[in-house]
Image (cartoon, rainbow, N blue to C red; front, side, top):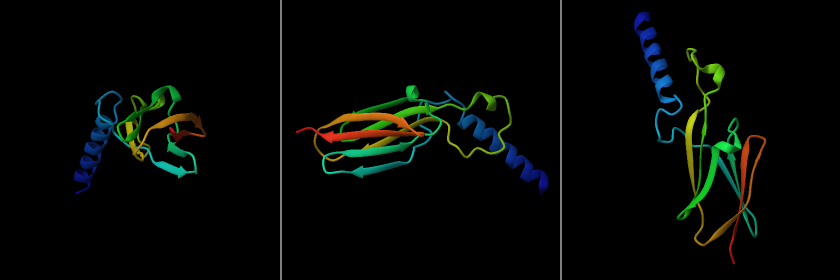
Length: 124
């Protein structure tokens, strides 16, 4: 029974390494959490992306949604090692955020304390 449990853990480790291998797939592997705050004249969207460099993020409109995409690569210190626990998601991410009907302008986009802060306001 113990040997079977160890084999299952080894198989899970192999699957984790394949799934989270950077560049293994073009599909998004995870979605970052988002907070949305509405003010009288604007929306502020906070996307939790600790460890993601701003150069690896892209924000764009796609129909009635704001889309945030990018990638959090596995740190170089983890390459070649055996993964024992992997709780932080790595790889490509995408988050589609529905926005109200109408046209909006992106007036703020900054990274602060590991969060991407986006400001949207409706065009008059």
